[in-house]
Image (cartoon, rainbow, N blue to C red):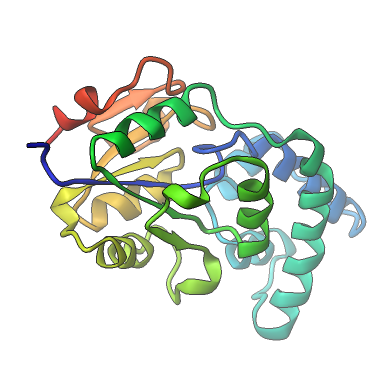
Length: 218
């Protein structure tokens, strides 16, 4: 009998390699405001961060409330328009998900992105019927590295944090999973492993990854 576990995926950089398109969208957004962040600034202050953090950091003042909603809608609308023709899953992930699902694994998605972005990706990639928990930025009060989104995912999936394995690509995301008491696979799409907290396993993509390989992490 297979051990009961859950696998929870972040979205950006984990299900799809979206970060280059977020960078393009943010560059357009900031360019219209006469700002030009560098690649290093994006790597440090964008990937894995909430929009409230990103906008407050680059606009150099607190962005919240109605202004946050308005600016977030503008930027994320740009992102979806730019990314929509390019939606493609990271290599091997669909085969990996089919394998773990066939072995009784519960599966969730926990993203800092808004629902509209997640819906775009789920409209192009056949995943939705395999997910037992779907959480986006609208579902949490505290964003990563706070563990709220992962603790809520575990609750939704009916398992304890020590039965959960998270796939993450950012420092704040890996930290959130570790803060939740979960095991973590670092997906090296956005950062080298030296820039992430210590993970249980690191992957470039999902090629050759199987249920048997991840169950050995427990």
